[in-house]
Length: 282
Ligand SMILES: NC(=O)c1ccc[n+]([C@@H]2O[C@H](COP(=O)([O-])OP(=O)(O)OC[C@H]3O[C@@H](n4cnc5c(N)ncnc54)[C@H](OP(=O)(O)O)[C@@H]3O)[C@@H](O)[C@H]2O)c1
Image (cartoon, rainbow, N blue to C red):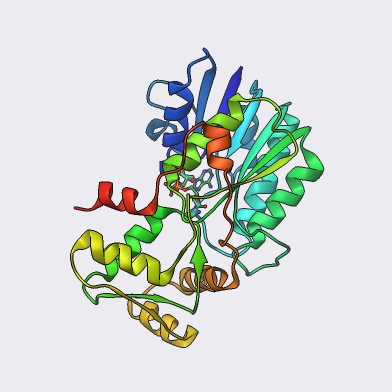
């Protein structure tokens, strides 16, 4: 089987290629990105830019299965259009089964909401692809750990209220994706890739305090306060909006989804937040 990974130069793409390789089976893996020289390592690498649909025809030629990893482009409306271009190109190239990495809690949304891209991508995939599987990621454990590291100085983690998130390690998302791509019986399924537990802001602060050996508290602040703080960092408006959007979805329960899908697809239990933090801390 010939399997393409679009978004292969990124962290999730690289980890997915590693997981596919570790599972053996003699499959041909094709690493696809705008910068093929950064992708692939020992596997075939091809250029494919979601913003240049003509590059995608060659990138997806001859593939049996394709994993679409979203780009990190947070500009409103961009990722939804990228998903549509990629799905069109894959279907035209004759790819039989497309696996889309989406986000937990995806529901109908319009531009400029961050979730619009995932809703657009999922709906277009379902309508268009011969066979499809959707893998909805919870929030990366590693992204929250980055936030903890940045907040250490102030000793405070901020949220917009009472939140609960089933943080998932990026490596577990990669392992589950590899399991789904190499497995059978996943067509037409929507999976929720979550960690082993749903944690509140207070839980995270307590785990971080323990692991780092210094007190870190969780504080619920207003949207204006969050915007004000982020604004001081000089972030562009669309990045600021995206961060606020994510924090709102935390409180609205989008990421409060707990399943056994990681283990079901990867064959191993997901790693806990505490263990990922222990392995990451400097
Ligand atoms: N669930 C979460 O908590 C969470 C958190 C952060 C991000 N995400 C999403 O998950 C995705 C994967 O995570 P990651 O950690 O692997 O991110 P990453 O390391 O930033 O990788 C992003 C990938 O997108 C590719 N890309 C960017 N623009 C592209 C374009 N126009 N056409 C084709 N490929 C393009 C990049 O490749 P080249 O630049 O080489 O083309 C890279 O391979 C992110 O892009 C983001 O959408 C999820």
